[in-house]
Image 1 (cartoon, rainbow over the protein chains, first blue to last red):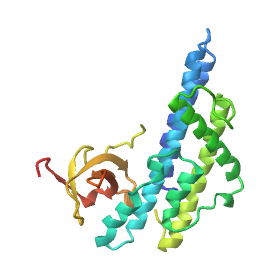
Image 2 (cartoon, each protein chain N blue to C red):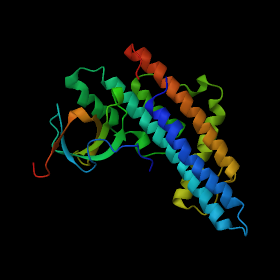
Image 3 (cartoon, rainbow over the protein chains, first blue to last red):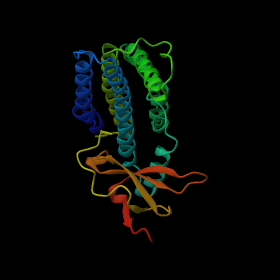
Image 4 (cartoon, rainbow over the protein chains, first blue to last red):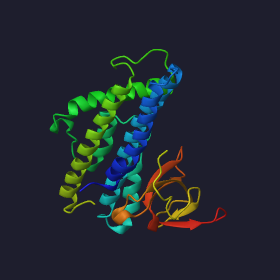
Length: 186
Length: 70
């Protein structure tokens, strides 16, 4: 059963990204061409894909922590909530394998991305996405190392990988929490 | 930023007390959405920490709106 966070990713965040994708595709084929608009649009697109995926991860973490807290005696709930929220990596860092693992492993299990063979290429894409996100955000003079050129095809591939990771993380957290709590978390 | 359809019943910027804690007055800084059990509204609040302000997320039913002067 999907979480509210995943449904938001699927029904709201993806629709928003689809609008930006359509804008970028249209900007790339303008007559006469407008390369500056096409380039800046693509820069915005890469920021938004990474930002929405980070938003999904933050939402899912919150949903998981609140499901956990609901099983804690009332007098302890606020203390547990404060611990779950303290010093979260996803609050301040890019949504990469390291930040996702460090935050979600607070629930007391190991997050094995390798459990799904498709996650290897997805994490490579996520790394490339975040390299470009940071290059755009910090306006670095050179393209990031170890990342392909910024094209609409590349951003679409990165988005598809975020999609796959979202499905996997949502299902993994559902199963882990169900085992931990002894009941469906949502 | 993408928002949920509703901003939730409490307003961002409101001063609140968190029931069951000894926290001083806190401020709602973000509506996180209906992410609690059964779709309960979740809010991110900022409270006084040392040396820096800190943040935590609570359900709507844990928060009590207070005036800025209280």
